[in-house]
Image 1 (spheres, one colour):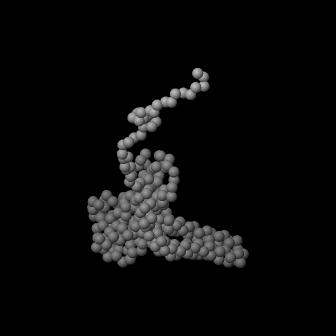
Image 2 (image 1 turned 135 degrees about the vertical axis):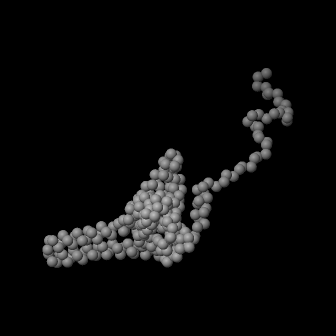
Image 3 (image 1 turned 120 degrees about the vertical axis):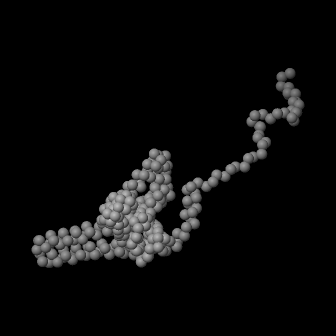
Length: 286
């Protein structure tokens, strides 16, 4: 009969098996393993615990004094040149005017390398302090008389330790070049994770990358000793060669090379150290 209602369907049994869409995993949930913090998170945590406010308060007078000294050097160079030039103009002699210009140019040329060296030392003051501290510790452990220790100043050299002349060449080499090994290691440790992942894996650059680059370049630019440190060691090695000292025979050539590199200030050693550490850090994982 058309239009008749469908017969009432009986209830389905309660023990029907659930369909694929209704099946659920009734196993107890496994606890999620927490991964240890990454290297960047550990470094960030340690950086946040450092007393930045106290260090900033201690570094502010030093930086102000350095800026005042740099400004004084520039003012003296310009004022000397300007004074001679004004005298020449008043006299009205062309030869005197040319002499005044040459004198002013020489003053600026002589002041410019010192200005660059002081800027390098200001940029890498952590390396200067660390190098001086290592030298002081080695000289003290060797039993040498220490007259003066300057951890940092705005000059070239920026830090130094005045100590008694060591009787043995091995002690002199340790005081002068053991800080070089430490700073070289720290420079490579800082530059390698900053350069290699970016050039090989093309990772993005973060603030930590810039901190690593700053510390790496600071350590690399102060890796080599100053001439006041390398010169006496080279002379002691040269004297030891005459006495047929085996350490002197082995060390005289490297000591003389370092003494030549550092003879004209801190610019050439800084460039050599940065180039060497930059190349080594970039070539480690390639």
